Amino acid sequence: MADSPEIEFDADEARQWMLAVGAGEATALTTDDATGLFGSRVALLDFDTDDLDHVRRMVPSTRLAPTPGVESAIAISGSSAQGRIQLFPGDLDFFERVHIHAPDQDTAYAILREAIHRTAIRAFAEPDIVLVETNLGVYPEAVDERGRKKGAGDPIEWAPGDVVAKRITVTAADGTPRTYAWDDVELTGGWLYFGWVAADRANGRMVRIRHASGYESSYLHLSAFAPGLRAGRHVWQGELIGRVGSTGLATGPHLHFGLKKSGTYVDPVREQRNLPPGDPVPPSALEAFYAVRDQALDDLADAVAPPAVVPASR
Image (tube, rainbow, N blue to C red):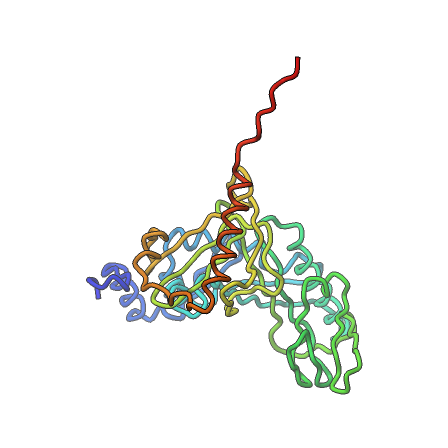
């Protein structure tokens, strides 16, 4: 295992983890009093110092907004190792347990709605996090929600604009529109969900895409993510994923492109040259190909041509 370029393995760390499990510490909790973050001690062993610092920095932006009558504690879900090998690398999950002080259920639900709304719209003022969606309430009937079929009892997925308006409009099975208000949707026991995209202070808004054969590409300093983009979504070649910007540590708008192979940065140009050649242009399309090529070269020449020098008149 240690000789494989595909696997990162540290014998001392593995020994520490196995000893902790053997000592019965798998269920022992470790708490960070500064942030209220807690988690299984064995799970936390999967995080190095940089990992934990990153998690702690994320807590204030992801935990429930302070709300009168509400107490909560936030925990790490999963582990650093899982985050590196799972389908959506970089995905970081938190669980937060919420306790509401209220005289009755209706009052508790009203407090919860307000707390969820405060937390969701807080992202609009945060420089390092973007709200993708919020789950609150369930549908009483089958509907079409932005092209996705939802059945009765399925969770309502509020886009950022829906959260701001506190209402969502969907299409019922008979084709008529239905509008549900934030303060009126039915709440049930169980989980509520926030989907965030976090930006890196240095790299700004960043998109990472996993490709075949161990490749991962990165697109840094974006000004905005494409609508509907979220962790785990499959994207297609030519699809819009974001817009060029200068977020993070950047002196001006540009795209910083990075390419990794098996977890190590590589030269994209060299990797492209090493790939098998693509299919040649078929003879039947050569004339059209040459026309487009020549026009593109002419446009490029016009764009970079030096300005004409006009002699000064006497």
